[in-house]
Length: 130
Image (cartoon, rainbow, N blue to C red; front, top):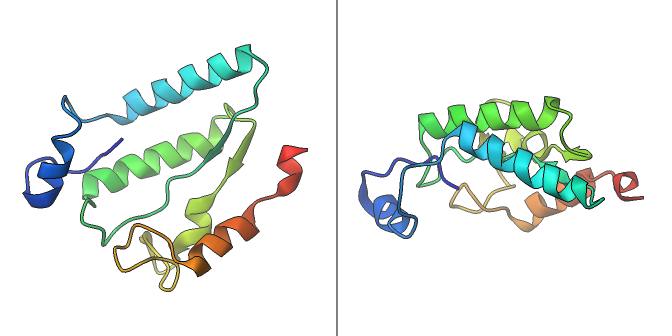
């Protein structure tokens, strides 16, 4: 899934692997609803994490950030999931919420460092899974 612009450089080349129209937030939320319904229909619990910030990453766009905010708000407030892991809250830089905190991201501003991954692990309430 990508909300990245499709019309420039390396990103455009990468996204050729995923033909068709860009995914909308409505598409993504409909997909979540379908997966949740199918899992719940089989007695399987569904947990979700919010989407982490990625400003500074090559695929970042303002449209993508707006989409991330919509999706995260839905994940946090819909009540559709059996539990939510708010990885956005763990990783975001309080001074620039669309970016990962310094020290938590690799130099690509998209993937976590050991410290970032550790912070995510430490944030998980294991009682969710009992």
